[in-house]
Image 1 (spheres, rainbow, N blue to C red):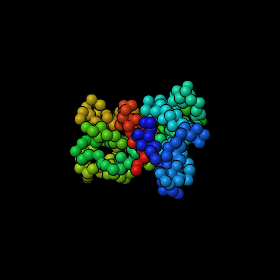
Image 2: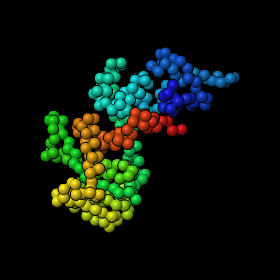
Image 3: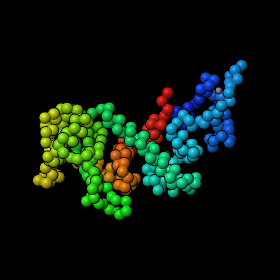
Image 4: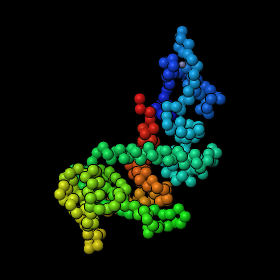
Length: 290
Ligand SMILES: [Zn+2]
């Protein structure tokens, strides 16, 4: 079974009492997995017959009562095929009667794991120093649940996001920031970009001071036409904003509080574009590390 061969389930479970490996045996009534681990003993040694669900080894499968295939299918429709949660539910319900809540719980769980991976990846390395990095900040508006449309006058409705785009490698990062003051921006930039790198930004005053540790070029967008930005424009980070905002509209409608997780999910979709890449990435995220 592909799920076992990819280490999404452990091949054996060891009985804590007898210290013997349990065998996987067919079982109809224990769970809907059609099999279970049972402590059957070994030549000459009697086992205690204790049973353990084959799911106990994986948080992904442990968290749901659905069959393994149903869980895989639910995750596939949304994270791999790219349907949004409502479309995915409609698609899945043609084959299995699964309620909305179960599906959303699995998406939330998977999104959290993806988001942690993206955060960890950014923490491990810095961008630069030999590649040019575009940096820009953008406002994400949060709607209130009872009204549609943007409500940027509401307290906490404005969310500032700071984005990084490394040319050549096309690596991207984006973080919610508490504000866009010089102090905040410089802190995030020094955490993410190696000293000595070349950075392009717009002329927002929060970027003043970058020239101490970086080769900084600021473009005044109001004075110059886009065609004259030339080399040092910030077009690519601006394309990243459209991509992330489009994804967030599709997958969360700005209604969720955990926008950073949706931003990370969007960065993950951008990093793993093909069906194969996404499947491989999910398998490695869900894999049991021995
Ligand atoms: Zn035992």
